[in-house]
Length: 213
Image (tube, rainbow, N blue to C red):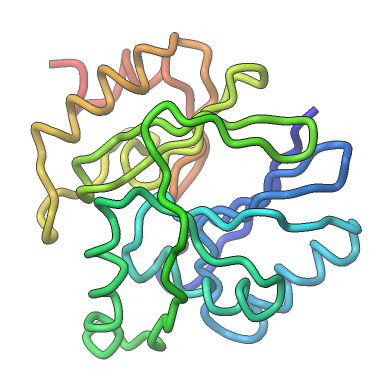
């Protein structure tokens, strides 16, 4: 059975997820930890629960979602895995640190790229990669069919959607990703977004102002 622990990090209130199962193996998703107190909080949780991180995944590579990549690499030896179309976002992230008054991410570069519909294994559990571009060119979501949840980064929020006015954003593509790749999974899927509260696919289908027109 999968367990999900959510941490809220940095000035942009990014949701970082640690997903684990009964084997103690875990996946770290979007570590936005930007200061020592935040990295220590993540490490303490992993250590105290005797978890073994086996994968670091970025749903996308905007600076607020990758600030902890270097810490995870230094501490656990994990390089990020991303979709290949997201590499340009990762390599340009340092340019935004001064503008946003954030530390340079200094993220290691990935050696493994994820593909649409790929099945990721950790412990006794699996996550399915779903390609959901629009917020960024190589954005992915992570779906657990068995546990009926999706980690969707900055694609879909409780009552809103991801912004598309940043480089690589595409509004029509984002709406298509939401409708054809996320809402198509059914109405009872729990949605864990990159910012804010959890929601469900059914709630967003019926009440999200960007999706009910």
